[in-house]
Length: 341
Image (cartoon, rainbow, N blue to C red):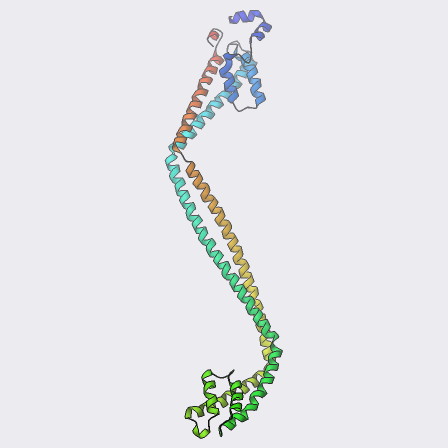
């Protein structure tokens, strides 16, 4: 039926013949379906498109023209979007070789950084272990210092008891210079000599003390004199210790204080090294994850896949351009040419 025939049939007759499902407008529906608009707006355009396009461009009402212009703007934007997508894909293909080289370099650098973090982590772990060992040693030294301080009274008692036992034998040693001692007396001297004299002197002394003076060799005589000197020196040492009990107590208390400070320092050093170790572990995990992510990205780089993306973008653009071309013909038809739409 001609345009005039439709006009003569009246509005109701014309409306009855137009349908949003008319296959004649299928290209338009397909374009509307692809534009970036809410579903409700797409439905509205699909419903109005046949009524707007059925009239020629020279006989459309201004509202119909607005609908056509609105669709034209949306379809033009859709075409531009596909052009940009094709440009992006083509650029990606053009830059593929450079991108792959760049990614390979990034993976190599990430591997180097991860290895560096592994080295730092190993060193930090070793440092923490050393500080833990130093802390244990500091605690042991503190324990010894405290024990030494607490033993002061017992040490006093032992010294006060030890001094007379050496003094009692000085006369016997003097006696040995003029006569041989009995084995029993010599053994008493030897018993006290062992803690203060060298083993060679102790072994020689038992023979020298029990030998008559006139029968002693020069070495045996020197040995007896050395025994006498050792006893007197030790008695003098004990007297000095007795006279310095107060100073010794102060020294032992001071030693405990120093040991406590050493423990505190070692505890802080251990804490700091543990914090550093935790830090290096976190950094290692971070860089290992970064390295793995880059390796995955590199593995995904596929030139054939990029070429396929370019091809797909070209096909999509061509399809849209064909549909837009059909829409353009319908949108610009005048009354005389409408039958060709």
